[in-house]
Image 1 (cartoon, rainbow, N blue to C red):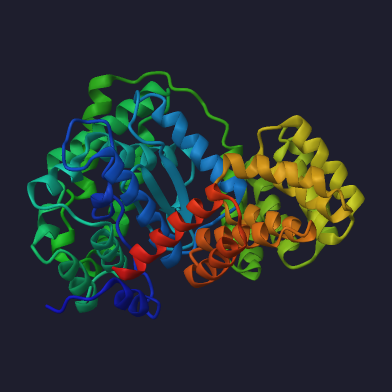
Image 2: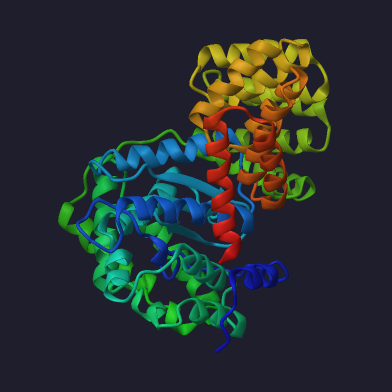
Length: 478
C-alpha cells in the first residue's frame, strides 16, 4: 500500500467529489478532547492538534464563514455543554459548505457539520441531538483511549485520515487512511458498541437536562438509517465500526422508556429555520432556491412555515440583485415576526447592497440597539459606517467583532482596508495575512505576513507573525 504525503493527497482530493460520510458511523473517530482522565495527550498537545487540524480543514473545505451562522451554532453548542460541567477546552462549532450527510469532531473540541446534514433536519432538537452525541464522544475521550493503546498520532496523520475518510470508499481513500495509519492504528480507532451507547446516553442526558425531547434523537437516527441503506457500499469496511443506527434506535427507545414521558419544553424554531435558509442561500444557487421555496410556500399548511419560505425567497432575491422584491418579502416576514431583530439586520444588508446607505444605516443601528451582542449586526453596521466615511467608529466596531470572533476572516479584510487608508501599511499586511490564513490560503498568508514582519517594529507583532508562519510550515511539511 503506497504512503501518500499530505501535500499529495491534498492535490488528489481537489479533483474528487466528497461522497457521503455517515454520521455516527465513521466521522466520530476524530473526537479527542474532554476532561475524562486519559493520558494519551497533554492539554497543550491537544490544543496544538486542534489548531493544526483547523488550519488544514480551512484549506481543504469551504466553511460557511458568516457571523450569524457561527454565533447561532456556537451559542447552541454552549447551551448543551452548560449541562456537562467544566471542560478542558473551549468547544467551537463550524458549518462546512458541502451537500453530504456528515458531521465530525477533531481534537480540542472542534465540531463540524456539513450543510447537507443541516438541510435534512426539521427541528432545532434534531441538530441538538447530533451536537450532543458528538460532545458525548468528546466528553468520554473514546478516541484518546484508543490512541493511547496504539501509538501517538500526529496532526498530519489525523489530517491524512480525515482526507481519506472524506473521500469515501475506493482504493485512493483506503491508501490514504492506511498510509496515514501505517501501523494499523486505523483499526484500533474503532468505536465499540459500548462507546456508542455511552455517547448516546450522554446525549440523552444532556437533552433531558435542557428539557429537550429525546425523541429528536430517534428522528435523526431514523434519517441516518435510511441514508445508511443507500450509502453503505461507499464506505471502506474497516470504517464501518459504529453500530447500525437501527440498533442505536432500540437503545435510545429503552432510555426513553426507563426515564418515562416527561413534559418537555416547546422551543421556538425561528432561529433554527432561519439558519437553514441562510445556509441554503450561501451554499445553493439562487435559481434552485426559487423553485424549492415557492413550492414550500404553496404547500405549507402552517403560516410560520409559509413565512419562512418567503424569507428564503427574499434571500434568493437579494442574491440575484432583485432588491425591491427582497425588501417587500422581508417586510412580510417582519410583520409576522415583529420581535426578531435579526430581520432588521437582514433588511439593512439588502439596502446596503442596493446602495441606499442612509436607509441601511437606520435599520442596522436599530438592529444593534435591540441586540448589542449580535456580531452579525455589529459587523454590517461597521461596513455601512465605513462607507459613509466614519472610519474611526467602523474600526472600533470591527475590533469588537475581532475580539469575540478571532478566526473570522472577513473582519481582518475590513481592518486591513482601514489600516491602509490610515497609512499603516505594515498593519494592513498583517491583517491581510490573517485574513488569508483563516481562509486557508496559505501562500497569500505567507506573502502578507512576511511583508508585515519586515515593516513591523513591534516585538509582539513579530512574535505573532512568526508563530503563524511556523504553524503553516509545520502543516505544509507534513
